Image (cartoon, rainbow, N blue to C red; front, side, top):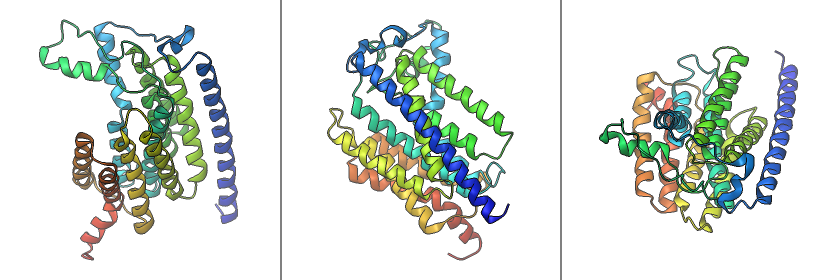
Length: 338
């Protein structure tokens, strides 16, 4: 493909993604308007078609609880980092640039989730925090069952639906396996299953997950439009949303500023590392695991300790920056340059 043809293709692709972002954003805004008409601040926003379609059978809840884990931030972040570190080496991606885009849009999705949740302050369905443990479940698994089948915090929009939509869309867009139709079909099924699991568990109203999906589509389309030439602008987008999320959390009754700070730190650290290092290589699977373990341990330590905003931003920036720079650093070690 000639340079002129390549530029023309990128321009057309940007136009398409901008159009998709416009449509998705419009639908999201209309959803917000309809929910506000029923008063989003009270549980009764589940009126009519928005009522939680919860099935309380133990086996159904167990399956839904397992499915919903695929939309948890820890799992989505693990997938994004793993794809970046080892994707090109295992022929999953064309280059680290595609993997960095996945990481960048993942941080953006989590930051947007915190921003929207702390803006709307919408409660979950009344029984979201409780679950009846089935009698056939061993006592040792009761705590785990309650953990994966209940929900706490604010509900609108669904973070699982938003995050899953963004991350699986990024994977369908950037992965170099199978056909495009197969990738996008698989992504759609995954989003549907995760979103449906949240309603089945009774931790979200139907409108919460629908809004989450459309917000996710809008964010991803914007990221795809501005990140066609590289992930740098997507990291900046994530940092911008992260700043807004931190400010919104600071005035929110929840007071969980550190939670939004971790995504801000991730975007800043990863973005700086990408700009400085511009990685052009990737890692083997054992090397990726070796990098992922300390990154994961540092992130878990931040999550469990809930430190101050400054400590959170610095720690997660360090972890994300190390993950992005690791392929180049390890390559230099191999060549004896450091």
